[in-house]
Image (cartoon, rainbow, N blue to C red; front, side):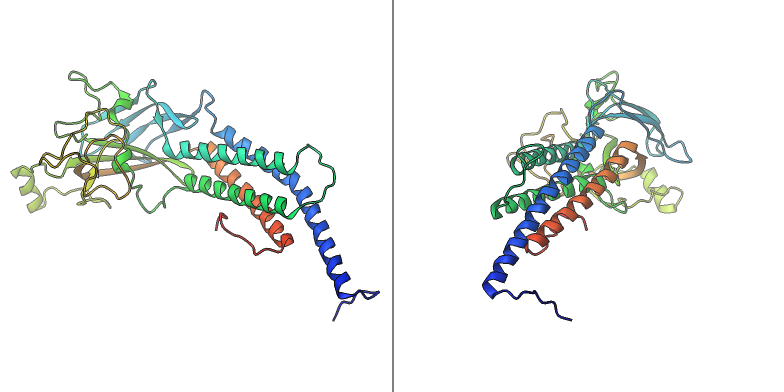
Length: 357
């Protein structure tokens, strides 16, 4: 079945009529997008408020289910863990209590980056609204090609920011460990009592520069995840009794996915002095062979090779982060629909860059 226009129009007149119709449709769509972008801005501001440092914050239980290996709590205010007490009873270490110093809170790097992306997204929407819609109720106007392209480019940047924010909340896959623990484990200075000869911190460095316990916090699937690892220097001598017990089977090493692997370990922001050379006169140390590629130790110390004797993972659901993740996903879908509509009216190929798969 064919569709014909009556009365018939000449080819040039028909072409001009199509252009006028497409122009009117683009004008209408851009005016309609004003309400969509305003709602997106309000939604992002609500997401921003979920990360705001408002007291008393969120108190989260940090405990292993069905056993007493790890029992305690932490309090998150914004992007920081400001206080908490955790009792640890690992099989390879004496029982100990870890108390977070309120004067030296722990900054969660994924949430700090997420805060930055949300700030950028809100600022970007503010610029877009002020440029494309000068007043709260803009009068009908003729949309130029350049203004439509500017709006499309701004929405693409916004989509990329939302995707990055969602990726930070999703974190690494649940089936894998976060490799950043080797360089971003929490330094002893964040815990009480402070390290000193008479009252050493539970995470204080031993004489060989390796703390007995790695305390690492991360985000996976919008949940706060704590990894505790009992560490042992790779070059530590094994006494004859342990060797014999392992040989005859009376003692067994704990089995986990990081057993028998060597890691280059260095605490984040460690206050200990950094060595000036590698001990062989080779000049300043910049990277260790076993240190993860692209991850430079923040403390300035040379990473030390360690084994992971024992490993415990504790996952804690955070209602604010779960709500934030759902909100970002909904905003991402709304933005994707707006971008598809704009691309279709502009006659451009659909751009899926920055959209969540």
